[in-house]
Length: 182
Image (cartoon, rainbow, N blue to C red; front, side, top):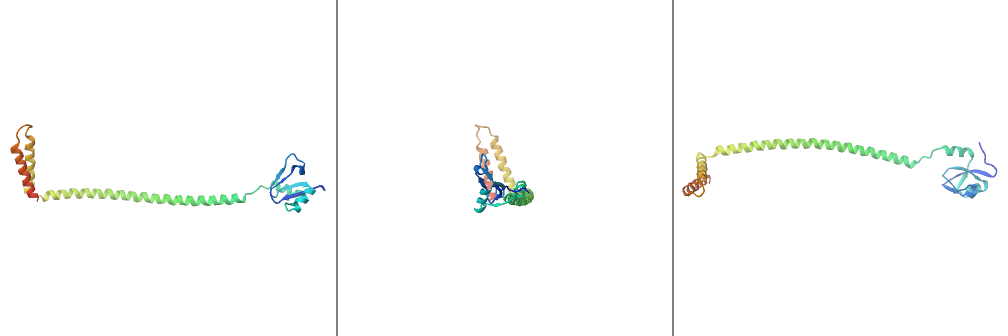
C-alpha cells in the first residue's frame, strides 16, 4: 500500500470539485468527481477535509476507486420503468388486436345477415307482385288490355293524319279501367 509523502495526502471529495492548477502544479485546473481519490499537497488536503469538502483516504482506495465503473442508478430505474411501460403497451396492443378480430367477425356476420334479408325481401316482393297479379279480376285484366290496344292503335296512326277515333277509343278504355280500379 502506497502512503502519501509527508508533504502530500490522499483525499476523496464528497462532491464534484475543481482543484486549482497552482495547487497541483499542472497546466490546467483538474476536475474530480464525487468519491474520486487524489493525492494533493498536505496543507490543501487538511484544508478541504477541515472545511468538509473531502475526507482522508489512502492510495489503495485511489487504485480501486478508478477501476470501479460508475453506475447510474437513475438510468437503471428508468430502463425498468420503460420495460414495464413497453410490456403494458404490448398487452394493450394484443387486447386491441383481439378486439379488432372480434369486430371483423361480427361485421362479416352482419354482412351475411343483410345479404340474407335482402334476398328474402326480393323473394317477398316477387310473391307480392304475383299475388297482386293473381288477385286482379278478369274485367280489370280485360280493361288493361283494351287500354294497351287503344294506345297501340293511336301510336300506329302516322303523323299529320287525323286520329280522332283512336283518341276517343283510348280515352274510353282509360275511363273504363279507372272505374274498375276505384
